[in-house]
Image (tube, rainbow, N blue to C red; front, top):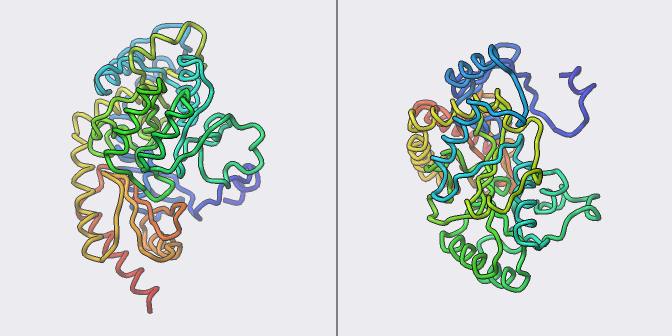
Length: 384
């Protein structure tokens, strides 16, 4: 830990853990202590840590060809993009692979500005879309924006879930795009009514603006369908994916409605490492596993068990599937550290009263029951 802190830029306040192994819903530190990972490696390990299919796929690909750029065709990239287009909402048959969530969001906004000939973007109060300058423009929390305001693109923030306010802003400003997280993870998994998203879609259509759904966290089956947009029954113009897409390997993607894809010409987008062979092998294996192991259904069952556990303890829960925000009505910092001491990894949020759980879909009923048993002990000990 001391060596890492001495050489890395001081950007993260890390947990006092040095992890070296992972399997399923569990991780292990350098001293052999095991932890049930209900934080999911920052919402990445939806398939579980070191899923055998992912490990086998990247080992096989590494034996053949680690990387070549998009200057050539690649069978593994063809298979991965084909699988992704099959799972995507109807009419979204084109994909652009990049490397991280913020890069996917920036690409989507860049495409929207070119397609519409407009500059302005509308985002939601509470949204988090990334920390690079283009995405930072649409990230709400001031602590991320401090010191960079002069470099940020023109963005208007409107209240999340307020259909009237967002409709008025869209029709008045006629932005290039509206970008939205359907579940605001950093805000403690805050959600909005289905009607809000339908109003958003209708206003974008009326104004000629594109609708970008940031499904970096909600996508890849985590909320009970491949994308949350499909659960909502709306048709975005673009969807961004990352986090669980590569089963632990860094990769992200922009899904585009076919009409929007037709506006993108040769050379207007580019990436050296996006769509690389190793990442594509991971994506292909992750998508195949998602379907074959019915992980979306498992996510729904996990939600139902956690919801029941919260109800039994008078705790409010929000989110969907394996994206959970539990409101304790009091600061949860000591609960998070207390659970970690007992071998359970959970996270906080921008709301100091809300604990975030982003568990792998492979977590068992017994493991969830064990979590609640430990939570009871931690809560009881802190109330004495």
